[in-house]
Amino acid sequence: MTKYHPDTRFLTDYSAGSLPESQALCVAAHLHYCPACRTKVSELTQVGSEIFLSQEREEVSEDCFDRIMAKLSDLPATDTQSESSTSASLAATGQVIEPEPAKDKYVNDLPRAIQKLTGGSIEKMRWRKIGKSFRYSDINMGDDKRETSLLHIKAGGNVPKHQHGGDEITVILKGSFSDQEDHYHVGDYIVRTSGEMHTPVASQDEDCLCLATLDAPIVMNNWFYRLLAPLF
Amino acid sequence: MNEAAAKWSSLLEKVALHSDRNAFQQLFVHFSPLIKAFANKQAGASRGENFSEEIVQETMIKVWQKAASFNIEKANASTWIFTIARNTRIDLLRKNARHFQNKATSDQYEDAFDVDDIWVENENEDVFNQLAKQRNSEMLHESMKALPEEQSLILRKVYLEDKSHSEIAEELELPLGTVKSRVRLALNKLSLSVDR
Image (tube, rainbow over all chains, first blue to last red; front, side):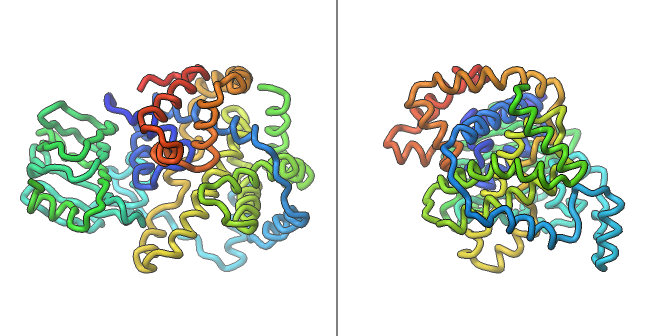
């Protein structure tokens, strides 16, 4: 059971669309596992929509509608048509429909964005290993203020002891881990503030896969350097 | 569901089933001035006429294309269109930002995922929540009007101006904790189950 959830601030900024994308990815990953927070987000989005509707209207340009219709008629096919006619018209225009990459079982129940990221199997990703039981793979979010990675800890293995130089959000995607404070499960959204020290250990029965994003204004502050030379 | 909501939903259905231009135009007449206002309130605006017109066009194009995926049983048409406008705004801002970034890293990023993969449009909502939601929609509308100004101001900033809690705290020269608690108070007044 998911026990740790994003607080109202994260959920509100997520539903408004203002949360930085790397953090929004973490919220989205949590929502995948947590129906209670999904309900909250859908309520918050409704609040947003009420505010949206209560705005003073601003007139659009005269030819706006015509431009939209012109753009639509330029498109080869739309979702409003049936599947078969879409494929048919795509085939007619010579466009190739790329099949989705085959997904292995492990990847199948991960959040949508993470599935896409893995390209079908986590073994296809580029990992950097640190020690016997820990590896990480960086995710490029186009965000120079934060560093986002997938972390993989072998069953029973641990992440070398480290201290956080910035605030970090971790979401468990597979397995579970413990640190000095608690035991964490799939879907848990864990926020660690700068300066906290911990040594996460994966449970004995299963490998642990996490998504983590770290506020990292310092260049040297990536996993590799952090673990190699923790801040004192 | 109130009358207006039912009207927008049935228009969307006509677009989905019959590619009905007339129904689409009615949706356009109602929603595009709201989308334009929404786009113009973007923080650090003065992005100008082009930016907001582009958001209007892109949003309405997606409304047309995605109409078939609108679920009349589960979703509210206005909320659905709001989420499309929101995602379109995030997407265009992201593309603009990428312009100023190192091209190599940006290209790589583009392959990773779309805005819709992170801000998933209502696909996970279950029917029970939706029924409760539709019942509450009019109540919500009424209680929004009754919010104290200092609370509704912050909610408007959050939802229209694309400002995070921290940015609002900075702008209003309030501690982050005050912004958080005003949002929470407002949401409680709107009878949202907010406990954290």
